[in-house]
Length: 252
Ligand code: PGA
Image 1 (cartoon, helix red, strand yellow):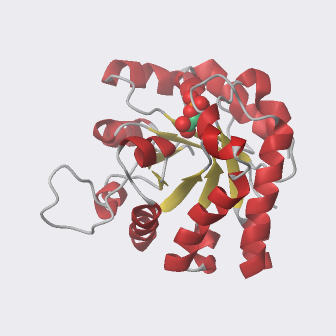
Image 2 (cartoon, protein in one colour; image 1 turned 30 degrees about the horizontal axis):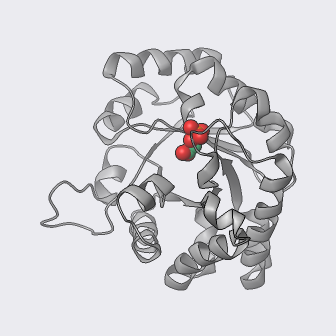
């Protein structure tokens, strides 16, 4: 059985006061022993404080990116060991905004994935096609290429302690979510790719959908057999909306 998982990606939003209010709202509404595992991913500078606020709550903290390097003269970078040190459990790697805006390629994403796991952080590996790639009929090929880059570096067994998020780029922040059927089709393909290497790992790895998930569409998307939860951007910044999405993930 795969435990449903919902992670909030706050992106570059928030202040200390807003974060405290958001966390308070989430903690107020979340049930003890929630069947859905929950994580939030604030900007780097707030990780420490958010981790303290969530201490003993059962809600995990993740970072939005990590350096591929372990330590040294890399101005502006944050290492996996630092994230571990301040209480992170997860880290997003390969988000499409990092790939597109900061030119992170498949090889760098794979190295970041490895750097995270070396410090026992669980990577949330984001993969997904652009609108142009979908319209060309290349969706499955693109997703397979992004996944293979990681598998080639770390091996399939590494997916036993990782999460994969399928995030079609055209659905992120656009209000235009993939239909449940579109998500299921790609998720099934991702699971099949992993199964071609190791069926047991494929059966256990959690596959999140991300891209304009909100309370109103979460249940339909999460009801798909290969969708194990979501990576939530905009809707994770409102406590009530985020809580409804977490509750919708319990359909499994
Ligand atoms: P969105 O973002 O929910 O705002 O579309 C999702 C993401 O980028 O992870």
